[in-house]
Length: 333
Ligand code: ATP
Ligand code: SF4
Image (spheres, rainbow, N blue to C red):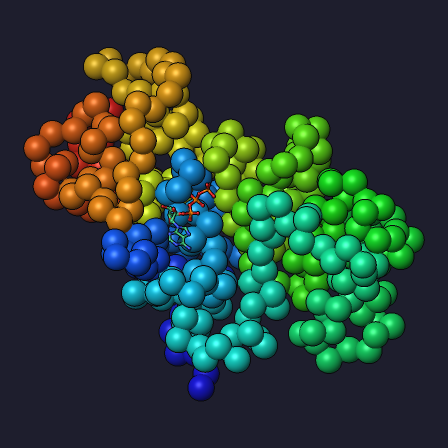
């Protein structure tokens, strides 16, 4: 069966629409990790996905790539890649045509996932051979070129992972993710566990690759300042939902959702000025029992009755999508 054709002119490369994925926890119920998430990713665009730990960022990535643990279930929505809803594709077709070939992922701590007893070049070539009908020599040549692309001398294709530094291993994993020329690359906290200087180098590499190859990228991170530097667009996630979505510059310099404002250390004040905050009081909610209404209301200093009862719809304000009942009032818009 082919994916359902929903193509139109000038469509985004990837369109995620009202996606829902929950985890079943025995005797307790469903953890609503991805709960009605929608966003578009254009060709060559970099989207930064930010939010505190546990808000569902990684869950969104593995739902798009359909690499879910046994207790996860997709409850609805669409993932439209180049006009086709790939959520409806049978698994064998998805494995052959989409996973790693069209959408690839670099995981948190991925550098430790390299096979220790196999040469790095062979591992990258293996990824190509698994998905493409090419000969071994061609796959090895492409592996060497990919290593060059990620800043590693192609002669190092013959090295084993233990002969690489942490940064080099993460570069090799990025090369692996690029092996089949994907349209979309999801990088989930790709610099965790690396030292600060190497982190900056890897982020620069991702930016270069995204620009040079025109790959649409989703960069998952805790850090809004990283996305301001690297991304065109930002999606701020809170408790399984996107609460603010828009151009990176706008969100970074003028966050509208109280949660984003707090993440950035800026809060709305009566005169519309900003001041610094050191932390967000309270903790994100348990997604087994998310609060009714706006999920941020137990931590939001601006919460009113309506916030406790009604879920705020996503609305467009100054070119940014925001899910907050009081946004205009708070910022005098
Ligand atoms: P981090 O930044 O720490 O990686 P995250 O934003 O990526 O966090 P997720 O890892 O997607 O968040 O987790 C979202 C929610 O789903 C959390 O409440 C988490 O505890 C829960 N969760 C994740 N995996 C499972 C699982 N296999 N079974 C049950 N709950 C899970
Ligand atoms: Fe705060 Fe209400 Fe806006 Fe939610 S809807 S962020 S609780 S003001």
